[in-house]
Length: 138
Image (cartoon, rainbow, N blue to C red; front, side):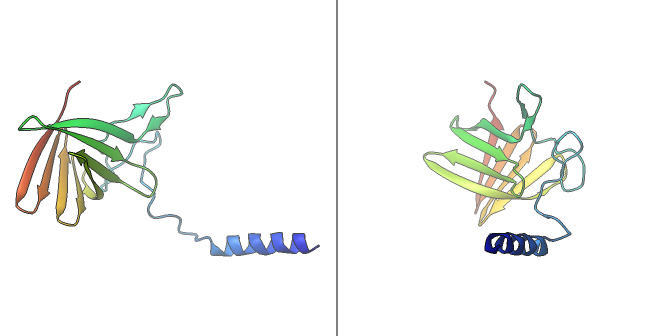
């Protein structure tokens, strides 16, 4: 009898803590799982990997090249509740959060570092330094 009372208490507490508004951090998608930009249009800067069952995965890895020839690893992550980019070079990794997107240009920022992505280009701003990167073709 105690176990049944504990189970009922747990479920009633769980139900009362649920919000009817839902999770506002979930990324907006259209019917086929394509990530939408903040303006409701398809975000052109996102490429998808598709598994054998046709399911789209929205964590993508790229190699970008700087104008001096150095390579930078960039990971775009579009999981429910998060949307960020990880930029790795010379043993250092910077993780920037998405702040806005209009479907053609997506901007990420954390602290004094900002990344702007448009098509195959990624421009990093850190203080007065500007680094232009282009997606590497394999």
